[in-house]
Length: 289
Image (tube, rainbow, N blue to C red; front, side, top):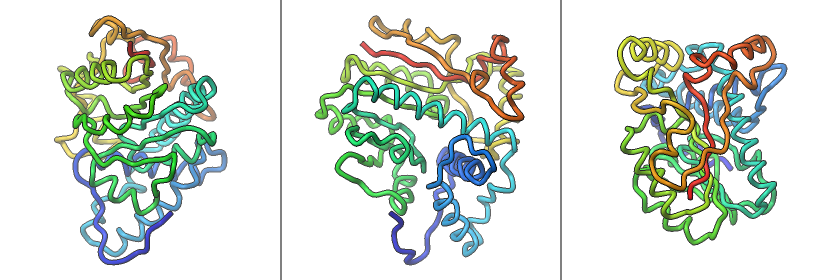
């Protein structure tokens, strides 16, 4: 539900928060296409409101994303979101009253897309993003918002009382955290929510040093138009690496965009068998404890 348009609104465009708007606009561009992949209709409403704010604010013209977003990014972001929706639906098929936590939710409307009438759902992101998000989404009896850094573990307190089973989603989040931060978070989830599942996007460690890092940073600047202080900080060498962090972490499956690309990008499926390309950036699914 959209809040009344009262007063001056400034968009939270700094740092990693900017990625939320990039994802949102990719969803909206996809929803306007002839054959949507995700068809996130809610994104159209939010994008229109962002455009309205930008039109009335010289400061927010810096967020001129629709013109800058590269064409290949849209199907990737839309396909990734659809796959994470599928992970949720598969989890809810096994546990209809399960608890789903969307870490780094941004302006995503996943609850609207996956609600089965029984799920307990939590959206979590930084306070600046959640304050803007509240203009479009309101808490309900089964959908709740947390304004917090994922690294401030106090947000786990309210969720722990739900009983589970739990599914944690981290779509486009972990790579912006340090390795110690990711490891600490995963082990804390394992300790406090034994038997929970984690679906998270990761980047290959090979792309975090040397020439690979330079290429990756240039790609992020071209595709995402992010400031220089926003960069990938951690990753994995292979899908089973988290199993090495502590006994009880079990790798379940993995997903790459090259498994699902469609339409005029379907030829990219050929690369799912090329390990060097498949494992630049991909998603892994674990059971914790």
